[in-house]
Image (cartoon, rainbow, N blue to C red):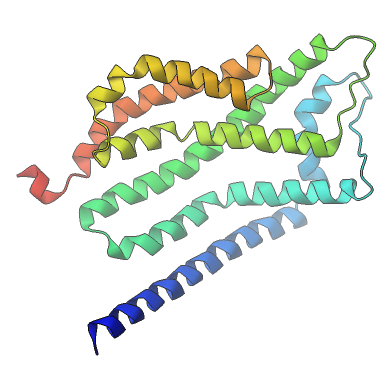
Length: 251
């Protein structure tokens, strides 16, 4: 067998392995989605998501649906989103299982903790947004609204807002992972990251001002955790780099 044929066969085998991992990840998401459809059901899932907004509205007030099929589609989308978030550890595991055979032993010690921490940090960011941020943001908006305005949010607009906020906070909580990767790959030194700390703080507030609503509460709720997680990354990165060092690097 020629080198070209061997390389082509290896490439095809990698594509087959990638397909299998994507199928397994999709099956995991489908199972989580089916479980949520059975219990508690899309309607209850959406009621859970809408709870922070409903709590900030006047007694007896509800959200509205302006689209004909919105009462059906929006709860379905929320259920799919929650299923994806719950299945993130399984999805990241499939990613790790795909790249693991081509890694050295010290590299495997790097990937698996990153996969686990990435999924947990993303879920933690979404949970922080739901349990801490939403209630305060909606209460602030409700208190600020003039008495001549009836606050009756549309469920599709609410879903778009919630998805963007959850994505922003989930991505923000990945800051320690980004810091660890930059240091471990030798792209930026830990000393340089400490030197630019002030610029990172300014950048965190700029990002928070862009991706969150124009209120101080949500901006601080995103910027402050981003700064604290950056400091956490600075503490963890040297330890992680030392533990995952290659054998020849110890010499």
